[in-house]
Image (tube, rainbow, N blue to C red; front, side, top):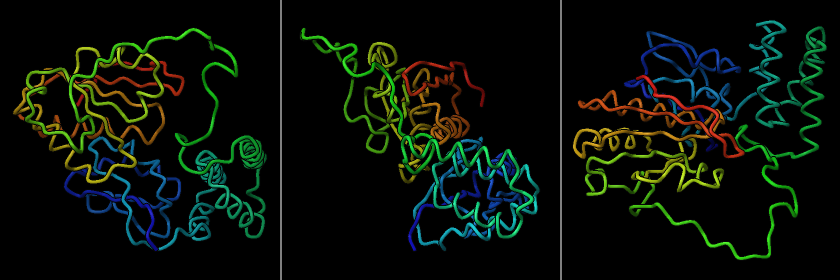
Length: 292
């Protein structure tokens, strides 16, 4: 079957091992100095490990792969003890994988009921509550939630003109951008995750003003290696001054920072890299000059 699954670029992987503990299914292991996917059967393709890779070696690809097998995963998980079981259940609940969570619970009841601890039960009950509220599958960033003013709040009968656009060029999608375009010459570049402009009411004034824009999504976009090459060309050939990476606080968005870091490591010139992390309410929850 064709489905989403983790893909590892061996050339970019440095074997740091950061991804291994962040794969609760145990699908990753460092072998011969490189991260390896042990089996398609054990990778559910949600990408919790992607944001923990410092070099951008891990991406989510769509290809022919064996279906994910929760029963096989649980065999390995149960061997790790109650804490590992709880972490796995939390992972499934957090990603709204209701079918897999139900399977895991049934396997525990059948094979090792002693591991159905109060902590594990609390995860299951919390998941049931959340499921009743939204029931959306996918990563934490896809979880349905209400933000901003409630119904009727902030509404006015008066016409409010749109703020002035601060966009300086077109196109904006990194996949379509030419690194040699005149608007990149010695520019301050904002590399923004696709969702940020919709989360922040003042995106143009607060983040885009005075900058040339590139947008991308590390979870849904394909051929991310080309993004690394394009950003490196902006640094070396267009001689951009700074690169600011604006991402959402959800785990799958962290891959955009890794792409930027990989590009700056590849580039010959050295420029400042700034990281800004935004909450789903549009507030900046973290801002710092990032190290390579």
